[in-house]
Image (cartoon, rainbow, N blue to C red; front, side, top):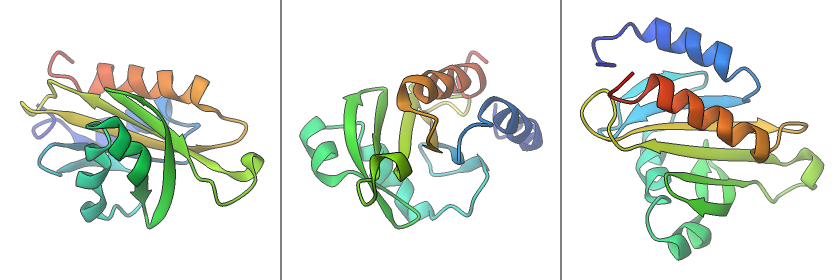
Length: 140
């Protein structure tokens, strides 16, 4: 399980595989953070995972990470992604969330990244999905 797994190994894998992400955080349904490259506000994790629920609510509420609101553009559970809308598209920041239904700790596990241009969702979402499948699933 991830709890018993060396979190340093998961962090090293994230540094390598998610190297083009600006930020990343990996956690489980209990809110236990396995790896992150920034100071996570754990109060934000549950509302972020809620975006995987009702599409209209996800679009309306967006995602908030480190106090920054990201508008949800795509709602395709187990993937939800979007972008900040406070600046020009060229300087906006993307966000992507991936849920693994059967995580290594027995319940769901989540991976979230943010990314900046020239990285776009068409490239970053599959990278996140592959990482989560490989490193967060019970089968990994």
